[in-house]
Image (cartoon, rainbow, N blue to C red; front, top):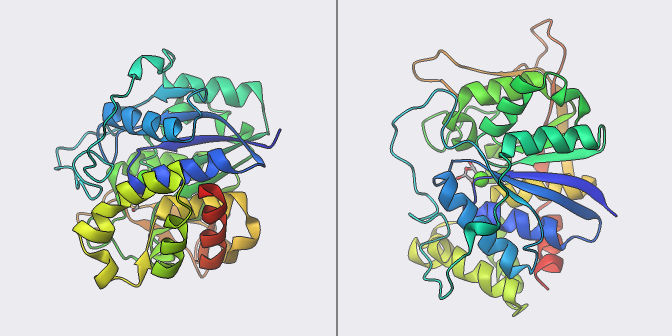
Length: 311
Ligand code: BDR
Ligand code: CA
C-alpha cells in the first residue's frame, strides 16, 4: 500500500488531471475524494469527479459531497473558466450514475478518516478550502492528525487570476483559507504564480496525447476547450494545469526546485485585497512560520509523471 491521500476537489479540468495522476501512481492510495463547490456547483463537481474515476476504472474510490457554498456566501457570478460544465463543455455519450456517492458528508468523512489513520494521511486540497476549514472547526485536533498537506491556491507576488490580486481558490472562500493556514500542520502551498511560471510546453502536451489511451483521449477532450476553443495553443507557451502541479509536488518531492518556510496569512478585510495571501518573506512578524511556499517547480517532472499516468 502506498501513501494515503485524500483529495479535496472542485473538479474542473486541472482537478481532473490531478485526480488521474493520483489514481494512476503506484505509490499512492487514494482513500477518498471529497467534493466542494468552486469551479462549478458541488453537484456538478460530483458528476465530473465520477466521470474521471470512471475513465480510470476506479469507481471503487469513495466520493463524498461537501460544502455547496463558502463560509460567508457571496453572490459573485461563477467564473466558468473551465466551461459552464467544468469539464470544457464536452458532449458525453454516457450519463453518470451519481447514486454511488457516499451518504456520509465530506466533512464527516475527512474527520473520520484522519482519526482512523492519525499521522498517516496527506491532504491535497485543490479547490476552495471550505470542507477543510469545517473539519478544523468540528475537530480542533484535525490539523495535528494530518501528516501533511499540499494546497493549490493563493499567491505570493500579489498577482491574481480572478481579481487583480486574488487567486480563485483562496478568493472563493477567504475565511476557509485563513482557518486552514492557521489550523493545519506541515502545509505546502503551490501558489498561482508558481504555476504561471511553470507552463508545460506544448511538445509535452502533444506527447501526452500520443499515448492514445482512454485516459489520454479523455484529457484531450476536456483540455480541447482551452487548447483549441480558447486558442491557448497560439497565445500561451504551454498548458498550466495548476492542480496537476500540486499533485506532482505532493507525489515527487524532487519536482520542487525552490521553496521557503514562512509565516503567511490571508487578508480578510481589504476592500481590494480580500482573499490575497500575505507572506512574511523577510520575517518582519514574530509569528512562527506556518507554511512552506513552493516557488519553483520542475516542468519536466510534471510532464514525465503525467505521461506515465496517461500511458
Ligand atoms: C485554481 O482555480 C481553479 O479554477 C483551478 O481548478 C485551480 O484549482 C487556480 O487558481
Ligand atoms: Ca481546482
